[in-house]
Length: 225
Image 1 (cartoon, rainbow, N blue to C red):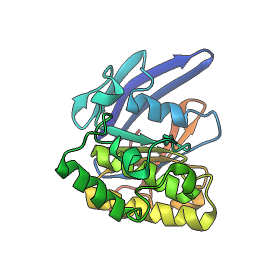
Image 2 (cartoon, rainbow, N blue to C red):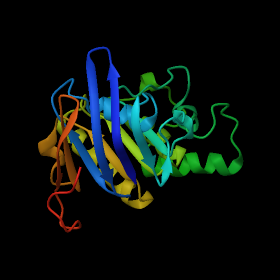
Image 3 (cartoon, helix red, strand yellow):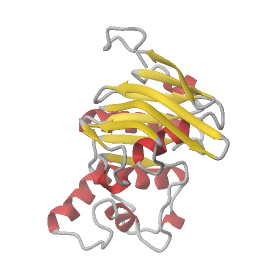
């Protein structure tokens, strides 16, 4: 569950204000023009920005001022942020331990997630040896290994071609269902996502201007901000 209560954030001349509640396991597309505040919304939830007023509740706990590592959140950016000197397996393992000193059970988890995202054949390769789609799979796998109930994605597949975007999106949704994750994804490809999301939230000029239920598994067609 994600809840923003009276949140206000200002940086230089930009301001963001928002109130919203997102139930657990809901899949939400965040849309709006460039600079509207979509990434700011994710950064506030993830703890990379702190609101000057209001509260942010995540899974029933107040995380308004907690650090990113303390929050039940993983975030995937458009840039996959892989370490070029580490192998695929090592980049994935960072989701478990920054020391990369894994137990046998943790090594097994890396293997299982690699299999789930189709990377089992490239675990010993470096990022420079991978395609764009494979790099995003590594970044997604690292997020999944963190095993947090809330997953945030900031235009993660925008650099991929349409067929690969659809493939990655279908994989993402399958994994979210299996792990029962709450998903927020910022996108400019709203037409590709609309039929696959539970909800669409539109951000304009630092405000959440619209919140629309898209699927029948939620009884209301509009939900309160």
